[in-house]
Image (cartoon, rainbow, N blue to C red; front, side, top):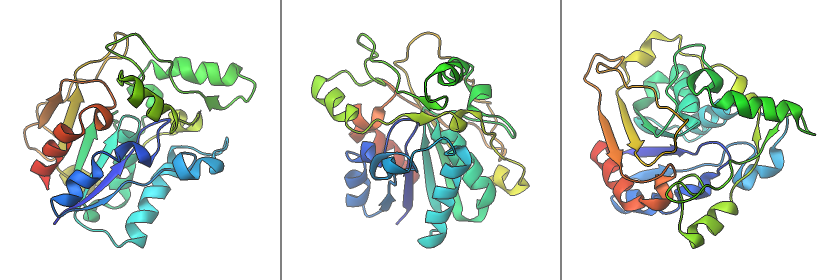
Amino acid sequence: MSTFLLVHGAWHGGQCWERVTPLLASAGHRVLAPSLTGYGDKRHLLGPETGLDTHVDDVVRLIAEEDLTEVVLVGHSYAGLVISSVANQLPDRIARLVYLDAMVPEDGESAADVQPATRALIDLAAKSDSGWRVPPLPEMEPPFGLFGVTDPADVAWLRTMLSDQPVRCLQQPVRLDNPAVRSIPRTHIHCTVKPEGIPRRPVPAIQPDGTPAQVWELPTGHDCMITMPVELAELLLKLG
């Protein structure tokens, strides 16, 4: 039995994994899919002080409270930053990092460094009435839709779980200064249906642990846990 800890990305909540968690659990694995501070059932905690460090602390605390070990730590999108810093703090508890269509940072980088398009969102937040709220990205024409979701019923469901993103999440840097984090195996899962203007960093052929890169693809949009949950679960079960 493996322990899968699924970390949602910006604007989302733990609810977005609802179609994946039972598939992993039915295969005999333990699955946790928390909402980070400011999202889902913690939406009321959203504030200007909420940042990347807040979300890293959320996951670190959960791992400690549940005494989790040999964790397959999955980070979607923005949560690539979160799982990187979590692994830096708790490398002995993490069996594998899975970057699910995610930002993959180097030490000291913020979301704005990894994904330059994020800078425009930071500027918009600074000019807004709040000065810190980043609203969800607008829905696009198919095949891109709302975070890659195009089915009307799914789009309506997704809208119920979206919250504003605090700008500090996009500004605070990742910490990857613990040499032990380099020994953790990595898997990259890419969603191939993506709009122009959001480039993806190439995955180095050799990963930090010295092994060849493991890169899998899903022919769908960004929120693959909603659009292709069975196929995503099948990939994750290969790791468990």
